[in-house]
Image (cartoon, rainbow, N blue to C red):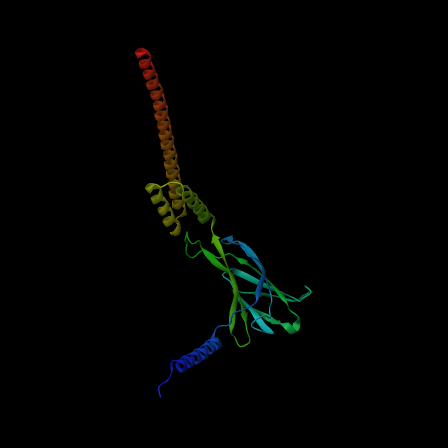
Length: 264
């Protein structure tokens, strides 16, 4: 007996449902811990000591976990993590400090009444391994994960910070200024110097990058000024033409009037 289309469709739906269940079983769990507050610097100079504070709450939401550990990673050097655990009233339950770029804190447990964790990361900004103008150079300031019993973990969130040296920042600012000047005018010479400045920046030749960027900005400003001067001249010429036409019209009208008077 031939199988009907409806029976084939039913079997397909059943197979699809089983596949979805299997995928759900092996899917990587997603952390449901919330970031309540964050104070992470967006920029930092290489070699300086910086600090950030991140507060986590909703610690036992989906997936339903009564106990887990907080793990952290960072590119900061000479780094210390301070984790302060609070209960629902805001009272401190416990506190710990751990050194290292990769750390795992103590147990976060509902039975201990912990409802909020404040994480403070303090360390030294690392050197820039490779300079890139766009996108700007960044390092991982912090990456926090929820680690379960048995070793599985899922990322809560991560934060990246732009790092720079005094020389690289001077070069970046010079290139930024040149780029702004080029936004208002089209000039091949200025554009060429601008692109060369970016290349010099990414090669770490910051003095040359500043020189090229300043030259590009000067050429762009000069081209814009020349363009404005040309526009003013054209406007003046246009004005003179209008005046000339008006004067010519008046003279023609008068000549016509004189001719009419003589004929009369």
